[in-house]
Length: 118
Image (tube, rainbow, N blue to C red; front, side, top):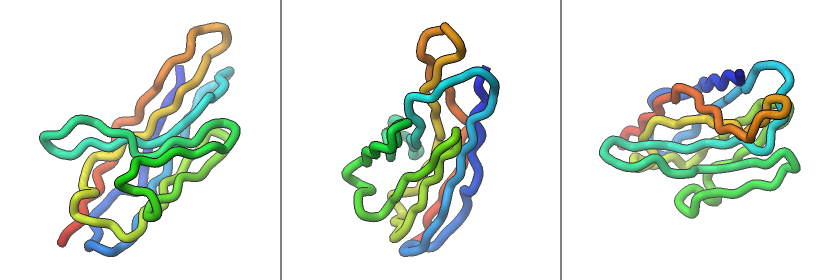
């Protein structure tokens, strides 16, 4: 099994910055990609940023130029700047990984709340 744990959420004023961290742990797994999704109240979960094992990144249009994803060795970070109230959401880290010969599986963390006050 792969465990995914996020940290770094909190309350910040609009225009401020916050850094989220995520660690995937376990044994015998290989990662294809990791990243962040978020879910605001009453809305569907949406992709925020993804980073592949090769370092390729992808961002939602709404966060381009403000958020930066980075990481390696089963750790991923999301540096968020110029935060807006509409960035308020629970942020979930995920990891797409294979355990041994098992099929590729997506593992999710429990989420960390980011609240941006106006």
